[in-house]
Image (cartoon, rainbow, N blue to C red; front, side, top):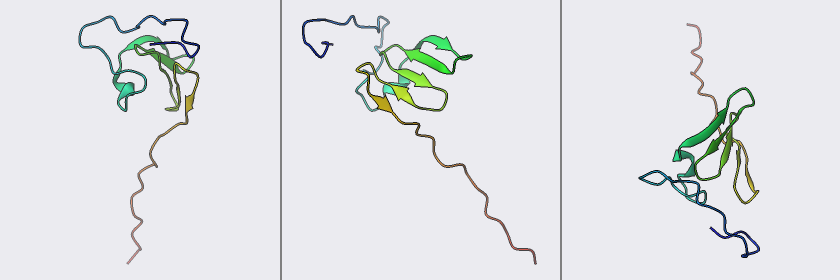
Length: 81
């Protein structure tokens, strides 16, 4: 992967067989965790993405992905008979 100024090459982080999806793939969250810091609320994935406990993400290029949890499931309230 090339750095934005095109003069610096970044090393490929994924060195195991069956490579992880790259950071720009739709399934980038499926990459292996290479470093985990649960006390700080984040983990580094093999593809360079940092994922946070609130489901937000910091991409290798510095862009961010807002937390994307789905809405909490609610059971319908039944009226008393």
